[in-house]
Amino acid sequence: MKKQISILSAMCLALLSGGAASAFANSATQPQPNATDAAATNIDNQQAYSFVTLTFHDVRDDVKKRGDRDVYAVSTKNFAQFLAWIKKNGWQPIRLEDVWQARQFKKPLPEKAVLITVDDGALSSYTKIFPLLKLYQVPAVFAIPTSWINGNTQAAYEAYGSGNLMNWDQMREIQRSGLVEFVSHSDNLHYGILSNPQQNKQPAAIARLYDEKTQSYESDAAYKQRILADLKRSKQVLEKELGVESRAIFWPYGAASKETEDIAIEAGFPMSFSLGSVLTLADAEKTYQRALIMDNPTPEVIHEGMREFLTYTRAPYKQRKSILRYDLADMAAVSYDQADQKLGQLLNQVNALKTNTLLLKVVADSNADGKVDVAYFPNRQLKMQQDLLNRTVWQARTRVGHRVYAELPLSLQTQQGYSLADFTTDLVKNNSSIEGLMLDTGSSLNCALAQEKWTAECQAAVQQIIDIKNQTKKAAKYYTNISNNYQTALKVDGNQTSFKGLKQVVQLIPDHADFIYISIDPVQAASHFSDLKHAIAHLNEQERQHLMVTFEVNPQATAHQWQHYQNAYAALRQLSIQKLGVENYHLNMGEQVHQHLYAPLSLNESPLEYRDLFQTRTGR
Image (cartoon, rainbow, N blue to C red; front, top):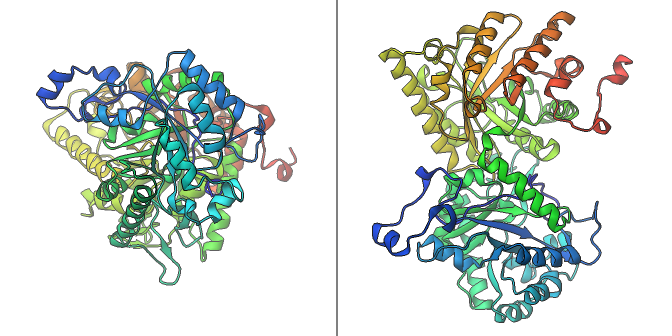
C-alpha cells in the first residue's frame, strides 16, 4: 500500500535532530533540564542531541539501478556498502534507547550519531538486512505494522508480494541478537481512507474519515477513538509476541501531527517518528523526523545528499519558491465533476510551467457587499460554498509536487468579528497536508511599511497583526502534518504604499518559517516598485530571503509591458529574492504566462522536460 499513497518525500535525506534540541533548532523551543541534571551531565546541546535518522524498507538482490518497481527498495550490495561506509567514515550507529536516554538528559549522544530504521516487516528484514547488521555489528530499529503480521495481508501483498513478510518466530530470533529493537508502525493505519467527497484516499492516521452516506467528516471524538484503539492494539500485540514494551510509534507514511502525538502518549508511546526535514523539528518536542531512502542510492549518493541538505538545514529560508496564486472561487462549479475538470486544467498548466508552489484563496465575497461570506472548506463560521480545498491540496501535492498555502484575510477577524484561529483550526484539521497560511493584511501594515519610525497607533496595529498571526500558527500546528514545514506569511498590497519601513517590518519575522508576502504590479505601480527595489537593497541576505513577491499581471499586456514584467523579475533576482510568482493566475491566462514568463518563473532545469501545452492550438 505504500506505493498507492504518494506521500511527498522529495528529499532522500534530512539532517534530523533528536531529544530535546537540535544543533540547528531555535533554542527558544528547547525543553531545558533542571539545574541538577544539567550540572551532573554537562551535556553540550550542539552535539548531545543531534543525530541522523535513515529509513529503509525492502532489500533485494535484483533491485535495478534505476526504475525499479519499488522506489523504496535498496539492493543488497548497496545496503552492505552503506553499512561499511558509515563505520569507515566515523559515523556512530545508535539505538533507540540511546535517544531515550539523551532525551532524559542522562546520557549524551556521540558525535556523528546515526539511527538506522527499517519499516514494514518485509521478509528481507530477516533474510538480507539482519545478516548484514550482524556482520557489521550495526544496531537498528524495525517498525512493524502488527496487523500485517497477524494476517491482514492485502496491503502488505500489494507492497511486497505474497509471502514476503516476517513471522513472529523470525522476529524473536532477531530480537535475541540484541541488535534490533522493535517498535510500532501502527496496527492497521498503513492504508488510505476516504477523505473528501471527490474520493481521495489519504493516510489513515492523520485524515478525518469522510462518510459518503451522511456527507460529513469524522468527529474529533470518533477520530481520536479510532487512532487510540489502533495504537493500543499495536502495543499489546508487540508486548504479547515479543515481550517488549515499545516506547515509540513510527507513523505510516510519516503522517503525524501534534494531535496524534498526544494520542500516542495516551496509548503509551512517548516517542514518535514522522518523515520530512528538520525545519519542523524545531517546533516539535516529541516527534522526530526521519529521512526516507529512495531510488537505491550508493553510499556516495547518500553522503552527497546529506551534505547538500545540511546547507538548507543551516539556511532553510534560502529555498526557492515559484508561486502561482489562484482563487478557488474560479474552480467552483455546478458539480464536483465539473470542478474537477477545472482542477485538472490548473494542475496540467502548473506542471507544464514547472512552478512549485500554489497559493489558494479559500474564502470569497459571494454577493460583492465587501464582506467574506463563503468558504471552500468545512468550517464552523461561514457557509461552505463547495468542499474544494482538500481535493485541490492533495492532488497538487501528489500529482504535480506542489506545496500549497491557503490565504485568509485579516479582515475576517478585525472587521467581521470572526476568529481567525478557529478558521485556521478548521482549515488545517481537514487539510493536514497544507504547507501554511498567508494572512492578507490589506492596508493594515501600510503605516509600518511607509515609515521607519512608527507612531504608537501604528505600533499597536502591528502588534495586533503579529498576535493574530501567532494565534493562527499555534492553532494550525496542532493539526498540520509534522512532516511538512508549516509556514506563515503576512501579505501586503505593494501598490498602495512606499517601503521605507520594510526592513523594520521584515525584522518582525524572526522565525525561519515566516515571511512577508508583497503583491505588486510593476507596470502600473512603477514608482512603488522602484521604492521596493531600493528598500530591498538595504536588507541583508537573510532578510531578503524572508520576502515573497508576486506580480499582478495584466493578461492583455502589450509586448512592451510583458518585457517590463520580465525585467522586473530579473531585477528582483539580482537582489537575491528567491520567492517570486504571479498574484492573479487563472486558467484563461495560462497561455500568456507560459509564453512570456516561463523563463523567470519555471524551475525546470532540463530542456528535455519542456512541455508547451498551447503549441498545437496556436500553431507555434
